[in-house]
Length: 439
Image (cartoon, one colour):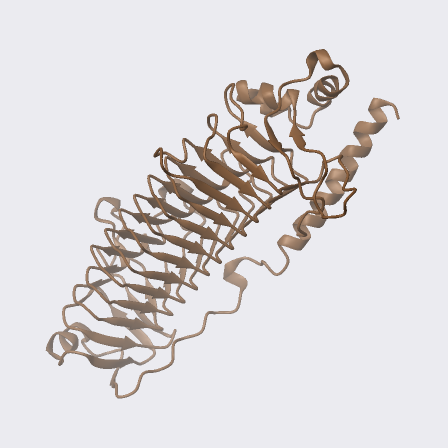
């Protein structure tokens, strides 16, 4: 087949595969605003009913500790400061509305519970982290709230055992991404659970100086960082759905973090990545799907400590510009049983390094041309990644602009046809798996 015809056929096949992959991954993924509302938590027993015209702050200040309040439908004026432990439950039609300054609800006590109602707005000062709900107290529960028009959604500081479950936090897509506030920010907060929340059009879910927190089964879309860890040892990020963010998950300066079973899709901008890791170690990255990201997994000087390792196992990298990018020659990273399908490149090393000192075992590559004579499901000859264009892009990242063009395609063909120009391998998997995981 002539080169021109071969190139045209390759482009058509890749385009069809991309469309098919996108339809599979994004099925039933309508924008958050059009989805069914999240359920309101069950109404607790033994409560006292409050009417919209009542002075809520005065009632809370004079109530016995651990009193349960039922908010009737209507609008309640903020700000509201909770100084005594209480449970406040309301339907979605019960709205606590910001006065335009400061925190709308400021929880300053242990054990408070906020359930079901709507919080509308907050102040707009980033230096004071003006939030719809601000928490500084242990064992606080925020469950099933709907938060709209707020600068920051939920901010927790110096607290333990917080529970943020089933909330809907909606930012303003008309504001530039970098100028929006964070949907959730935890600072010096530990042993807490952030689960089953729906977040859209905010900036970040930010977990800083906050060890041993669990981020589970959330849906985060159209933001900057779906979840950003910094100095957060022992964190768990599991079962989340990150769609159309600049970065799905970023882990910095942290150890013993587990990233499992997440979908990281649509981080397709020039700096987009499904998972970024910087100077972190002893990470477990397992059973995730990285789909249509500019970079699926980005590793920068990780693991950082000499006695740390990273394990990357059972992940799918599909329809990405590059599946895995190393900022420098990597060591002590184990890649086992991952699948690489329809990526521009499976692996790239920036600069002049390679990934030969990482361990590769049992990964599946859709361009593997080996055979399996003994029928054990693994290739009988190693998979070697040799790419002249990949090498050049690693040394000169600006050349990535020409990815997919005939010029780099011709250069790649030259590297395969003429041994004189054949580059050294980027990495070698001695026992590649024959069959890749499906989308």
